[in-house]
Length: 73
Image (cartoon, rainbow, N blue to C red):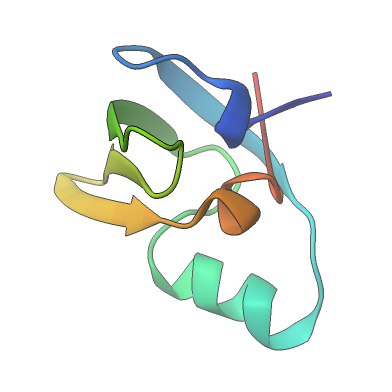
């Protein structure tokens, strides 16, 4: 299983599954990260948190803990 937190800068991946429960999972889905969507990793902060990604044509910052809940291929 590969998560979004393991993806290198400049790579585009496809979301396979969202892990997590309740409000956290709902918040990730509300940001546009759903099964089957492509995510491009733009930048990662020097200490690895947060991630800046492009999803559905807009830029989004994600915490590392949230990125670890997103399974990608």
